[in-house]
Length: 249
Image (cartoon, rainbow, N blue to C red; front, side, top):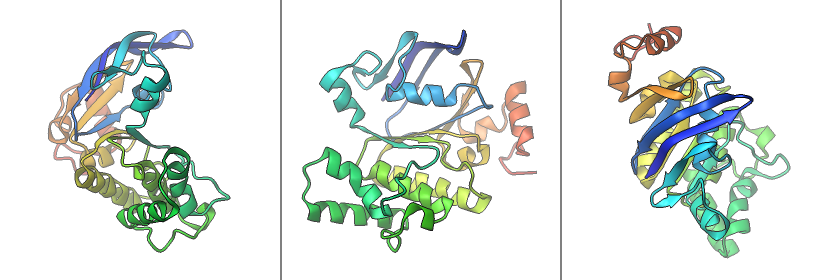
């Protein structure tokens, strides 16, 4: 469904992505991990063409999104939902209004249809009692849930997550992981998750890819990832106190 063909991205005089090739299957939860500055968010922005490669190509099914323009690019982008790292909620709008905004700007749905759809996704993310609150009146975890509701309100085929658990406590983080997996399977979407939170990736992902020096040094199922013999992967696991059975030690 998503394919990178020999993608290189040069920024600030260095290759942030360096001849990167991989594929993500339809319906998969694909987690991308790595140290700060490894290029995870740069990779994510290429998928929806917020950045274009210096060399190589990015494909969504049969569309080369890295070369698309005009209506073709717009049509491809409509297949995506995007959960930004900070939630990106508008502070002067209620949670309900934040979630309704994409429907009002991008669809011809009636006010009644919009209300029904927003209430539906509020229930999906467990915020059915909080739609009338402002973002600063709810917790960080609830803001992430609201951001996720907005990302899925237009029923996208693909959802991109940029650090979905950053700044959250461990209990709230695990609840977000569970929500990602539940929505992925319940709605049949494809999910790409960029995260520092390896425990979350082990919990929710079908495959985990570790990015280092512009390339994937490991792409594996969670069970295989924690038993990797790659020294950089082992160091990353040890730094988060994760044992070979995937548990914290």
